[in-house]
Each structure stands twice: as C-alpha cells, then as structure tokens.
Image (cartoon, rainbow, N blue to C red):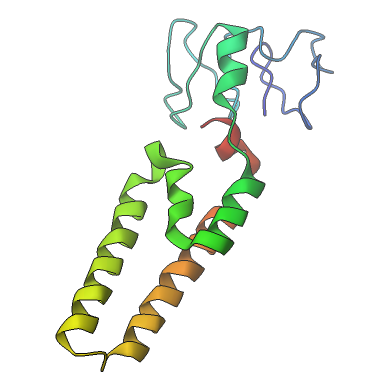
Length: 144
C-alpha cells in the first residue's frame, strides 16, 4: 500500500503516513497499489489498473478481498477459488469448468477407462489454483 498523498510505501494500513503526516487515502496524486504518480482526474492507474477513487470510503471498500480466504478456497474447492476474484480471474474459472466437463465426457465415453487421466487433470488444476492465489502479493488483493 502506498500513500495517495506523497507516494511513500506504507507498512500495513496506518491511519497516518509517516512521511507526510496525511491520511494515506486522502490524497489523489499517487496510486494506492503501486505508488505511481497519477493524474488527479484519473479513475484507474495506467501502470497497474487499480481503481483510483477520490472518495475515501469507496477506496477502502474496494480492498475487501483477503489472500487467506483465497488460499483456503483453493485448498478446499480448487478452481472455485477464482469466483472470489471473478472480475480478474474469470477466464481461469471457465478453464476449470471446461476441464471438468472434458473429464466427465471422457469418463462417460471410455466407460471409466481414463480414470487415472481424469484424476491427474483434476489434481493439476487444483495445484495450479493453490499456486496462483498463494503467489500473489497482498497489494493485488487490496487493489481488487
């Protein structure tokens, strides 16, 4: 997270920026997610695509996604974790659904002969979802 007033990187979510003394969400000169200088009238950051709301309450509400929740969803529900961040991960969710449909059709067509292959594909999607959500940094979830 970066101060919107001075662009200094912040640790955690402090009430005041230690560099400039302003509330980190009060400014409109820098991106909250990546710290890039922004146009004061811009609605999204050119560098990272994060939303640049000037309303403090709207900006705080945007960062409502949690990395821990995504990881737990990936561990227990595989590709369904991408529904949690659907706006950015819709294609991954639909790839998971497509693989599931392919596995079902393959199992029906081969009368269960390809059982091992279907398990390998399912485990591959499951591992991909865990790695995908675990390797993202906290700023990605905050700027969601």
